[in-house]
Image 1 (cartoon, rainbow, N blue to C red):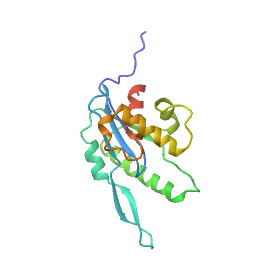
Image 2 (image 1 turned 120 degrees about the horizontal axis):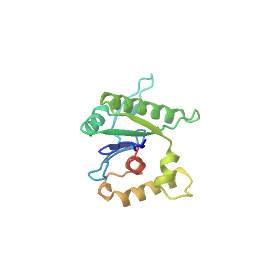
Image 3 (image 1 turned 90 degrees about the horizontal axis):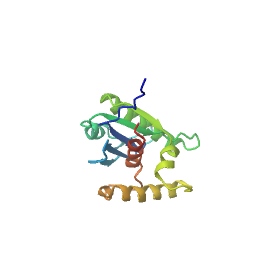
Image 4 (image 1 turned 180 degrees about the horizontal axis):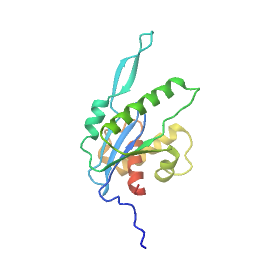
Length: 170
């Protein structure tokens, strides 16, 4: 009996760098006509007694960006959860929930990935520390996808996650 490879023909990969400062990349199977945006956000008043604003994912904009993606498959970077960084963890989990709601509305299948897994394949080895990883991501992203140079703020994680998935033929 012959074993067949997974049918990835025609699939479109969505890479999601989770969080309100993240990015989202979309790369079709053949690698042409890629798209990228910074995670769309809105600032709203917090729901606590103290008057302050929080940044949240703008689900309407995210929905519109992903709506027409054909044969989509999303890869979401697992959010940072660290009890010593409560506000950052809370923001990451709030962003994840909003993103999952949009993916589920659109019936887009997804899986999670740890940052180290995609970084191992896409970034040079031996880089340590968050700041240096972000610099490497930005540099590699600009080289692989120069058409998005004006969209890159701090890194290119979203588009690199999508490219990792495309190369891995998930």
